Amino acid sequence: MPARSLWKMAASGAAVVLVAAGCSSDGTEDTETLPNSVVIGIAEPQHLIPSNTTETNGSQVLTSLFYPLVKFDAKNEPVEVAADSITSPDNKVWTVKLKDGFTFSNGEPVIADNYIDAWNYGAYGPNGQGASYFFERIDGYADLQSKDPDGDGPEKAPAPKSKTLRGLKKVDARTFTITLSAPFAGWKSVIGYTAFYPLPKAAFSAPGVIKEGFEEAIIGNGPFKLKGKWEHDSQIQVEKVADFKGAVPKVDAITWKIYQDTQAEYADLVTGNLDVQTQIPIESLGKASSDLGDRFQKSPNSAFAFVGFPTFQKEFAKPEVRRALSMAINRQEMTDQIFQGSQSPATSFVSPVVAGFRPDSCGANCEYNPVKAKQQYVAAGGPSSIEITYNADGGHKAWVDAMCNQIKSSLGVNCTGSAEPKFADMLTKVEKKQPVGLIRLGWIMDYPLMENYLGPLYSTNGSSNYYGYSNPAFDSLVAEGSAAKTNAEAIKKWQQAEDILVQDMPVLPLRFGQNVFGFSEKVDNVTVDLFQRVDIYKIEVATF
Image (tube, rainbow, N blue to C red; front, top):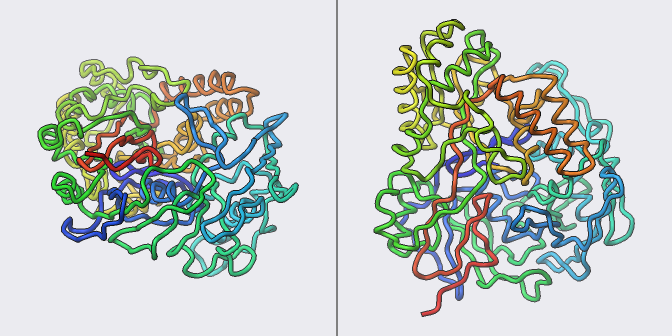
């Protein structure tokens, strides 16, 4: 899902969710102070319905309102939380038993129907849910989809064959089974994602129909409940649920304060009007240590920044041209000078935080070698002019300009950055295959598996494969990994698939991110996880 300054792509067509720049308040608005509470900065969420939430801001808020079936331990292994057990004899039919005693914040008991109804709603194509593709492994998903026969023409898409997933079956009040269309050893990790939260019966005005206004006052099964309603472009306040049966946070309330300007957010952090900023803006990195002292911290995250080649354009159809451009740039110099060491050079196609990552798997094709780059570029007939398109609302101009300067110097060709106002504007052009040149993109994982990078980003039908890359051998290896009996066997196949990317170079890896965050003197035990989210169970109000 997209992060604030990266974005992520996902679903539907994937979701790229963009990491947008921070939104919000102008940094001067007063926020009602709740007892034993904290204030955490976010950007305006796109959505709060779980199956439609594919970016980090909405996902962060949902962590307080919902309790997942599984969470991930220090080794990124899934551990049951709302589920009592999740088992499968064959990696194809999975049985989920729910813990007893959990309720939604309106008092409804959490039962199997709540998961089945929510997932059917998320998977049903006409509902247009951004995270719908997360349900595509469940048997019957295809029958919930339909295709418009004439695109944007006058005809309408026919109704899908079914409104419910054949692979979801209720066993008893607290037990249901999930039958996948093909075995997948990593499925237990997948259902830790936001899209798999349950919805109460109060969410629906009729079977399969979300009640109007539900999203504005959403009801979850988590440790907090909404206080009032979602105050767009201002704040979302949540307060603790009494007698919550799961892990209990240390604070009684959280104000998710919405910003439209990360600099205003930083100013609020420094003056103590905000307790946590999860990404210090680049412009403030140089002074953050002096402003915040040891309250300025870093931690790993799963962000991966890259540039995609429009492989459907003849100028970039040759892997030799793409490999030459990769060797023409100095990743270390860009991270040092532009990002001041807050990110690290990426020389692999998956993040270091997932099992199976291999340092420098890209090898010589990601090493800065301007002499060899120019030789290969000329020999392959690379274009005399390069354009790199990026979204202007994400703070990308500085590094795109630096990258262009490196390309000019290494290859002796023109290079320009081209800004589109918003990420959606850029995607619209890309989806229409308009000639925008190289495409700036980013990804934050949804669940900790190599497959979550390889499948969406590089598979022929990948939800976020905007560059048109297609290699049947790569697709087969990703599928074989997904069908492997164990994650260890899966990783071997996925690494073989990654080796194909090294030669084909459909994207140009640039940087691996990390959380660069700060917090106020008012709070302690602040941690930001691999998904760029504050751990709401650890944070507490400091004692003096």
